[in-house]
Image (cartoon, rainbow over all chains, first blue to last red; front, side):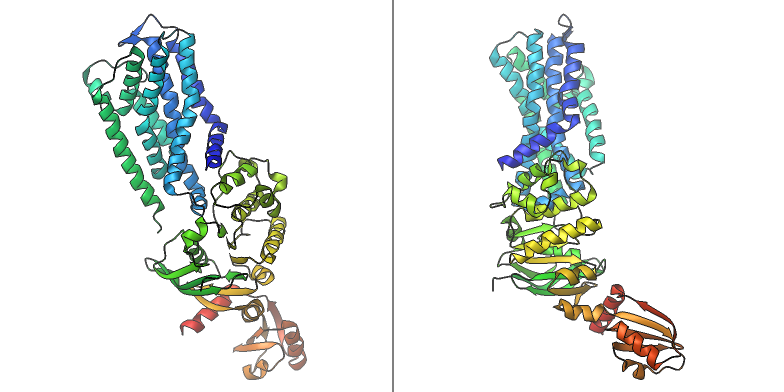
Length: 240
Length: 296
């Protein structure tokens, strides 16, 4: 099983898109937009700090969601049938995808936070750095479920378009690119688990508890999306 | 009864289509059996049910006393599916290691590579393989659990001549080690060269089942077509090598078990015969004839 997991990670990091979307793009955006703007505010924090957490979250989200989405590609080439001839259960298969997503999210996230520390975008205690990381990883749970859902809903070809569009849409809506402070835009954002993941990361940076409301939104989306994903999984693998 | 494979009353319908319509096959341990039939005969559906990939509407399957799911998960059965390609981003060796990690016991990776004759491409990435190499790797994947039973669904369809040759070479090696092999094919030649026994399937039912030599005589004969006015079918059937004669107006059709002998006898006995045409076995036609006989 550990060999299987190791191979899953190897496959992921060897894909060129992995490096681009979980590390290069968010890192460049942070260095260009965030790091030079320590004097500017974005809500409660500086623009530099805001972009540091946002880009760490964005890169990690790319890793976590793509891992689930790869299920669609494996279904397209008939690999799931090959795997069904082994002792690997459907549940373990999905779990290994989610774990791969998280494991491959770590390096990019850590490097972006490290860049944040080196550029003095945030001068905080080690505990708060850990808090940011934990907030991002826990906050991405619904995105991991969403990735698996796409894996069973989409075809191999449509997977990338769907994931790409969802990325754009969700990140705009959830205050990844700019701070959302009031109005109906905030009402919408507050329904999005991704908004709360970002909020939790920014709050952790300031040593503030994000509050049960945000945690509940993340939990509800996780349960709903995981259930949908499970249903799609059962439908996709029902032995016709 | 726990040895070998028992399939009984197997049935699978897709709406109006009776893909598999009551199939019974008993395979003893160590037998090499070809499931021979034209496209759409129900070969793949039967094999998918045997592997637990498709749930039968009715019928029982026992593989060494196990259900198909138990048999595949435990590694007692290895299979090469008809369709499917490889996932990308891994070398051939890594791919085999990855699968080996999923079985309770697996053949050492080097042995798999050697047996499937892919040790020369072990370090090549899966996306860089040619079609023939991909097929060899897919065969290797079937060997990974060191299975007692090997199931192959039209293994050579996507292979070039050279790959096909190498493939049957490694297959033969595997079969001589006393293991059970069931392969689906629509090539009579393949069934003839590699199987001890042929199970003929057409339109979801088994139309013949017996030793390869016997089945080949039934469906593998040639036909001679000739123009011969005023011929008598009964007399023509007495010619050596002719198993059945049909007279259609001025032309005659001779189904032969030995077409060489039949031609000589025909020309000697009937100098008026002209426009001779000898054609090889037409499997589709043979299947249709056999099916008509069974359903009648």
